[in-house]
Amino acid sequence: MPRAEFVPLDSYREVPIDEMRAAASSFLETMRRRRTVRDFSDRPVPRDVIEHCLLAAGTAPNGANRQPWRFVVVGDPEIKAKIRSEAEVEEQAFYNGKAPQEWLDALEHLGTDEHKPFLERAPWLIVIFGESYELLDDGTKAKNYYVSESVGIATGMLITALHHAGLATLTHTPSPMKFLNGLLGRPDNERPFLILVVGYPEEDATVPDISKKPIDDIAVFIE
Ligand code: IYR
Image (cartoon, rainbow, N blue to C red; front, side):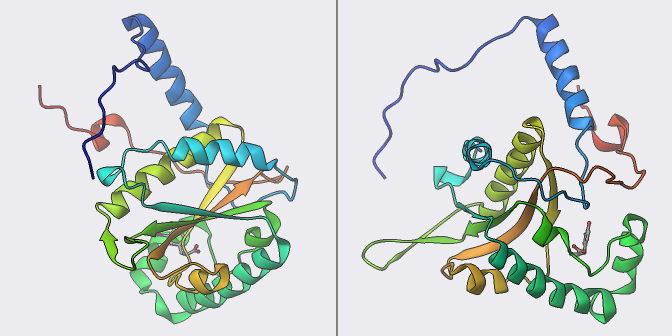
């Protein structure tokens, strides 16, 4: 890779400290309204909103700027039905013998089970892949770096962008997920990371009454 041209950092905007405080605290309020939703409405969501949120995710910092992600956005009802049926096969096995009891106990309070109707009902499924390497035109492989970190950061930014736009999401990880390559016709260098279910919540949607850890339990300051 030739060295990039360096240009002034024109996009940075400094804000006064009081505005910084207000921005940080109001963003916290916004983020505290985000909930993982499992009861999705079938109301349509315009594709351009999804595209903007994906472009926001695509601004994520990542290894060597290789941008090792691929978002496969599924709105086709037939493909969604196939994803649901294959995911439910995996989940059936997970909940009925494959998952260790300790894992099932850890999930108990969330009330999850092998039924995944949201995979058909929500208007969009964003299937997120990480590209472990790039296939160059001459057939050689170019390795990517920090793929799971990069894709994880991009996924977090996507969830944030969708929430900011007024949409609900669910991170869904059927295990194993390799069936997604076959179903979606994706090449071997793309490894499924997770399925992000996107849409409006059902009007009577409920969520578990759980809380997030306070600052002292998630951070240590060394000053
Ligand atoms: N993939 C399963 C199980 C599951 C695992 C974790 I860790 C969760 O936080 C939630 C669910 C499922 O989707 O049901």
